[in-house]
Image (tube, rainbow, N blue to C red; front, side):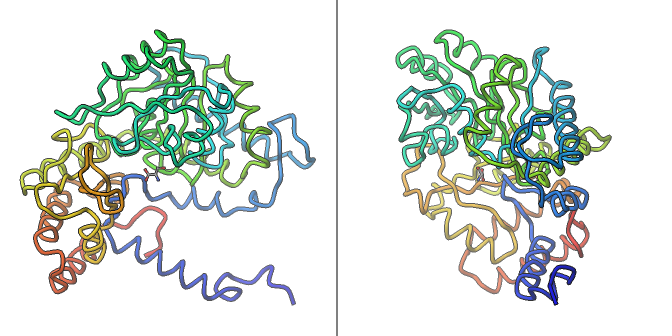
Length: 425
Ligand code: DSN
């Protein structure tokens, strides 16, 4: 007897049980991790389909294995939809090329290095401590080891990216690659200004929109399309697709990017993921996506203001996007014990450094909160106000287990009224 047609529960009850537990956890808790979301049933159906079985090194019409009758169509559909979506909200008209094969955001970013740089070339990106990403040249990343990294930061006064400093550093170090992209920065990015700095020093401008790609697609965050030479993104954050990556670039860079992804970095694309990206792009073209993206930002603004009123200030004094950083410096406690206590109370987020943090990276002074997942459940102003109250209560006495248990029950009750996309109740 083989196990090929037997259910997961029968084949592997341990994993089936763990998945069921995760399903329950995702249903019963408030997910405020800024990079997480709920993929729809349709996206998950594509992810869990037979397309996972197929190898297809190469690109449509030029593959190294036979049997691509459906795979080429799947990949072309994904490309066409992503292209249409991001062309519609472009900052400037642009002949856009799309590659949907990167396994996730970090491989997408590595492909940019491979396409445009030689080892030892100079790269500039926002420092990790100020809200950048490891792959924008951080010392522990391959991107900081194989390339000369010149990080830029944010201003001490207002925690915003200091474009004067970016320009000054760029003129001094003449980077070949300039990143405009963030993972923990609550304000819009001025892609026009980054473009002019890149032009002044002859750099390739790369926009990493992993966090904001859903907002960009919906037109609620300025778009780098038509400005940046190359744009990378994950597909599972505000974009609400499967775990995956994509690269959009000006047509003149198409061949360099495609060659960098395959055969430069990767083997066969994950066709099940490609299909799910196509589904997510279709959903993003649908009538409700813009409203969702607007609500993500509105909820973030409400939550940031409510936290501030409760004595929990956010960096920069607010947010323009889906996330905020609470600065606990004045509370004399690190972000880590608060994040742990909140997790017990059913409110899930991550501890995070704030700009110019005086504490260590493993117990920094901040909390990062994002509203994409709770917004996908349909939560709004009332729930954001309750979240702020619960968070303030936990910060007040993070070791009060009775209180944490009471809040966890209240959180569960609210969550029960807002079924999450893709989650079985
Ligand atoms: N891990 C992602 C985040 O949480 O922002 C970035 O790659």
